[in-house]
Length: 114
Image (cartoon, rainbow, N blue to C red; front, top):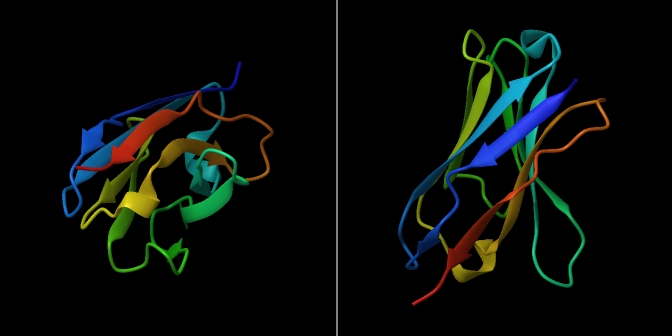
């Protein structure tokens, strides 16, 4: 069965950093574009970043470009999101997803506040 386990979320002060991880299983991981999305309370789930199957090309939402970096480790079946210079507006539940697969991780909470 396709499964994603999201982890690494925490509470951090503005300007701090966090690294999220998604452990994937149940499908040919390296064949899929992987993505991170996030959803803040009362708001729609929004795209954050994605990365091609071979890890060669990444794309970011304008709101996180220059601050976040997505990466993947295909032998380990994992995708990470390094988040630097965090802002309060980054507060959300973060989810990983394989493009075109209708499955999501359970989400991991990121809270940026004083």
